[in-house]
Image (tube, rainbow, N blue to C red; front, side, top):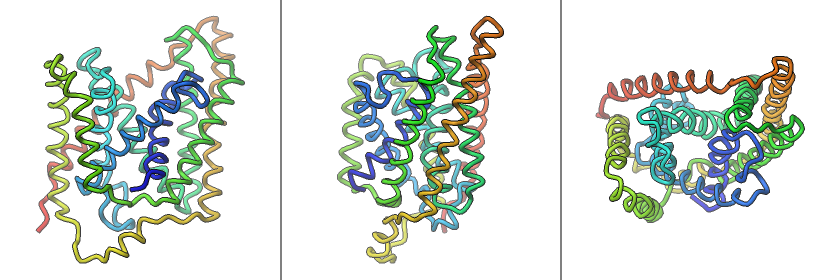
Length: 328
């Protein structure tokens, strides 16, 4: 896995985990002081995610057999690990408001939106002929984004003008499209070398263990959540066995190289439906709040629904992986 691929996939995660979440020109927005810091951190977290996907044999089958319908449980649980690495090891918000923050935002945002949708589903739709499905997903994400963005008026007591939100969302989505383009050029099936996997995991230990020593209760929460998840992912790994050793290395290398075609470029333009829809929703709530004479706490509905959905998905994924039969 090359540096460009790591950075491209890292920006996809950075977009959904930070830019999509904060939904306003904060200090991590494009052109702001900590944008590069955030991008590099999520590139590292994306590398950890790729290591998990590779180790647990997620998506190892050929593309026509590795549909999200039968791979989503393992993808979602790898996303859970990614979310807890971000919220429990890099920062420590996972331990606030216990036990709710185990699910929020590790599961409800990182695993669901960043990984399952942003990292896995959208790239497949961008390379497919399903322009209609891609458009529906972009509009759906736009509705979600605009509705969620209004919540920051209520939570931070500070509103962003519709024009500023439109500029922010359009610029962020344009950068996201470029990230998908470069990720496609590099190919999304490149393996992470063993030395890089070991170095990344050692770095994770260096980051987290000093904190774990001083906060043993938090460490117990972190290792318990990750340990339970790894247990179910090992079931998935056992079900698919070891990667085939008779596949020529040249074929494996060729499979990792992407091609840019007119379909992909056209599909990237469809992503503009996301910020356009979000801006219309945002503008609608500006007028609605002005008419109501108060700021509407829209985010609480998303917060509650997301928590319920993500917990249901985790239980469903764990049960499905627990029933996986070992490979013969």
